[in-house]
Image 1: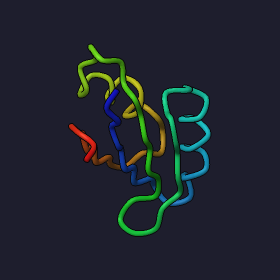
Image 2: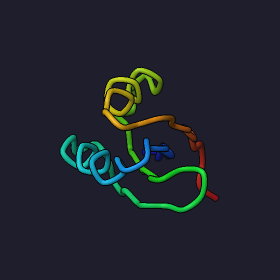
Image 3: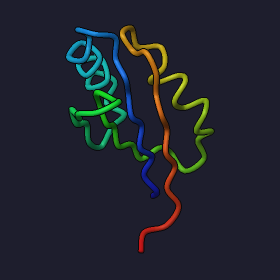
Length: 78
């Protein structure tokens, strides 16, 4: 299984609400609060046959309070 990382920028004042909504969906392996350009860092192990764009859109993009996401796909651990 290869992890997918999603950085999430939230509208001001909504970070905890967004994190709660992500936690309720039970799609993540790890969820962190971060500093910098993005507010949250989400680590996901999507199903092997998942269309990544569709997976992110259906499971993350619809959460109220999200302003922007940055998805990073990984390929191989060294």
